[in-house]
Length: 295
Image (cartoon, rainbow, N blue to C red; front, top):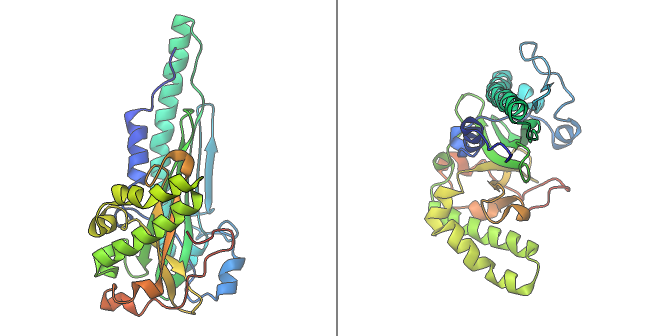
């Protein structure tokens, strides 16, 4: 008997996780934290507000394993945001759970009726919200969504999110960037650099610019198709953001085996490309974690 195919609703969950940054929620940071204090806080080390309980939710049964983690620093930044993110994650996980139970039950019943091997294997899904940077009343967040339905390999989606403390909705790229073509050109340049570093030989490396051009399109298209999946990078300058980080999930910019990319456009390259309301929020250089080198 063939393996069960991904149900329509599970596929929808994966696609929903691919939504642009201005269409999805996220999690994050503490207001006015010093850089050292931020680094000392583990995402799971500090309890969230009493209404939310634990920053970790997990459940395992015969047909599924589900988990959600909200960076505890989000609660320090905005308790309501942390609660909303956990609630949204749990809703998505409950839908996935129902699909897993249904598929597992169907597989067992079919196996019992036909005598064929039951090919069903437990499904798993994890959703994590992690702060990428925070300064003043703005927080950058990265959402990681992993889905495994016992196929050839699990898949994961990276979603960038930016929130202002006073707003329930994520910040749209258009509110931050005014020169979309210039932003897209910078994005393409840095993606070419990142992909070239991973190229396995000179021939493939030489083909990277044409490959990026084909995937991202024109400068304006690069901004509108991929540049909206963005979050913020910490800075070497206190109270500023060091750049904009654009997230590429597996398959976005190459085959699954190539993995994901987190491409950071430094503040210096964003000069002249930002709206007046956001230009003053950027400065210094990207201060990325040592274990997450800039692409």
